[in-house]
Length: 256
Image (tube, rainbow, N blue to C red):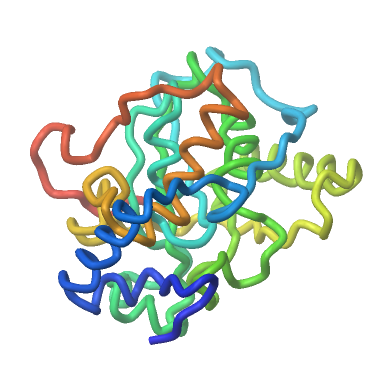
C-alpha cells in the first residue's frame, strides 16, 4: 500500500493495516495536540454561487434522490449527513454491474464503479441544485481527474449520476456556470452519467466518519469537510448527523 501526503496513507491502508497502527496514529495526534484545519490537512472549501437554474424547493414529491461520487465515500456521506433536508445518505457503488459491486473488486479500479453516495432528501427543505452547490464547494474537489487526494483510481472519480433529464440539465448548466465564472483554478472534470443502479456498500462502510473519528484518515481528510460545511454554508448545516444505523432496521437493498 502506498503512502501519500504528509505521511498519511490511503483509505484502503487504514482498513487493512490493523488496529495497532490506528491506535498509534490516534495517540500521536492527541499527544502532539494537533488540530487539523483546512490549512494543513484535507481540502479547502471553495465559496461558489448557487445554481442560476434550479427547481424551486417544495414543488416536487415528498422525497427525491441524488447520487454523487467524489473520492472516498466516507467523507461525501458525512457531509450530506450533516446537511439539513437530507433524510438519508448511504455509501455505495454506481457505474458498474451488480456482480462487481463489492469493496474488494471496486478497489481494483477495473469494475466501472465509483464510490458513491445515494442521498435521499426532502425537496421542501432543500433543492437538488443546492445539493450540487454543497457537492462542488465542500464535499470534494471537482477539478481532480480520477482521484481525490490521497486516493487515486477511476473508482475515486468525480461523477454525478443523474436520475432523470431534469437532474442532468441542472448539473450541466451549473458546471457550465462555474467554469464560465472561473471559480476553480482548473476546469471541472466531473462526469455526468445516467444512473442505471445504486448498490449500497458493506455495513462497515456506513456512517464511517461518525463511528471512527479516531482514524487518522478521517481526521485528516473528512472532518475538515464537515467543518467547511458549517463555516461556508451555515444555513444548511446541522450538528447532529442523520445516520444509516439510526434508520429503521432492515437490509440495504440495491435500487435503480
